[in-house]
Length: 82
Image (tube, rainbow, N blue to C red; front, side, top):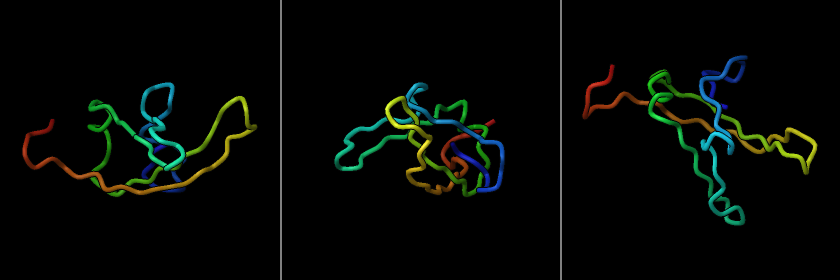
C-alpha cells in the first residue's frame, strides 16, 4: 500500500498480484515489479510517499510484513497534466 505518511490510516494506492500492481519477476534474485495505472498516478501527491509490502496468502498465516520503501512523485515536465 502506498501512503502519504507512515501514520496515515488511509492509503493512496493498493498494489496487489490480483490487480496487476505487484509481480514477482525473479523471486530468488529479489526482482519485483510495481505498476501503478495512469489514472491512479494522477491522484498521487507531488511529494515523497511511502509503501510497505506484505505477504498474504493461504499457505502462511499472515499478513507478514516484508519491507518498506519510499519514492518521490514528481510532476511531469514534458507534457501538460490536468
